[in-house]
Image 1 (cartoon, one colour):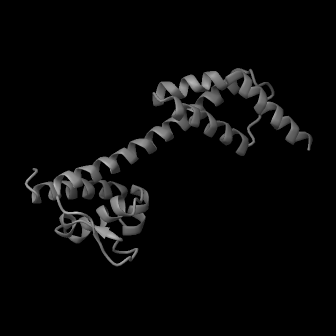
Image 2 (spheres, rainbow, N blue to C red):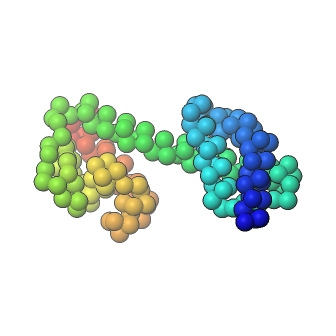
Length: 172
């Protein structure tokens, strides 16, 4: 119980000392108030979860550690948003390129619930990558594991698939 109280006291001290500094670091990376607040919250949750404790909350080691944690939390949020924006942009581009709506197919996790006429023209290895990344919204790592290929291969096939779909619709 005593160590738990020490932990709570330590986190409270860190919050009072570093919350504004953490927010400024997060905001400098994310350029968005609500995302910066989320990053600060994520960082404190990580500190609590990993039961981080230093003798003094105002020590240089503690300050460096906390700045590293908030920087990493902010970068993770930034990268996640960047990945989401790519999927949204790609989906928007498909809608602009094609007048055809998504066609509903029989729900099957291996083939996807939806596909576009442009995707149907892709060779299987490219179709599978686009299906995993866009339709099922898997990460590059998950797609690589599912298809038993490297992450670099997933990215390259995705890039080539986009080019093929643009060409097939005269958008090269």
